Length: 278
Image (cartoon, rainbow, N blue to C red; front, side, top):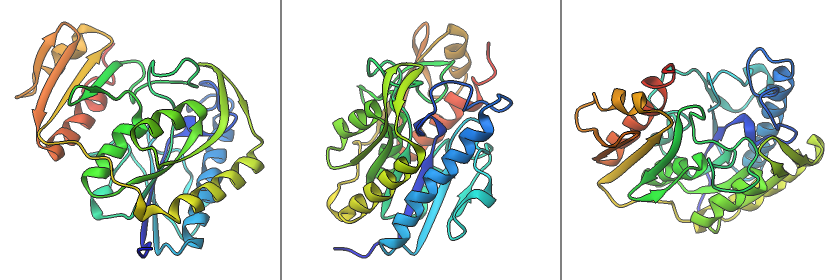
């Protein structure tokens, strides 16, 4: 087995047990403090597993909404935290610095599964579908795995509901799926107790990291063509202002380029440009 040095964790709050609606994931809502605390403790279970497997460095990227959800004092003291929304990657900031393994806390993709809990694709109010090289990839964890794969890092574990585990494993069968809840509808689930969930996360991450060097990074052939179907036409019209971006249908744009250019446009078009468009 190769030496495990650096582990990257991307943390999105919808993947947490007990989280089933906007009450736990939206700043200002009554249950948001509970949701963010639960996320930190779940992530800590993964961090501890990484260190117990010999990792020398663990970086956690806060990847939900304004990306300032995890309170650093709640995080494992030996981990490092990436937070703040003004950056070049939505959920994978600093992955290009070289990591041996990628772990994702996430949710089901928009319209991929029948009972994915809070299923959406990055910007839930704006994005209907996304395709990379003609392949529909509405699951954020899968797109993030492509970004990590470009830099030689495999996704080794996915934490969330049963649906997202199945969605990721369809692209990376060797990835460890850690299902802490079973979706009953978009806003309903059967969850395990948080204490049990953290034990599952700890053991699942250990199992994944024990074979990290046997899991191949998910890579796409370059140049990469990214297509986005927006919810509304004005979003496509706005993105069309970017040189190289073509509007191929009233609500659809397409752009082709090298991987790093596409990754930057990914953040620009689905977050900064359209986030405040009505």
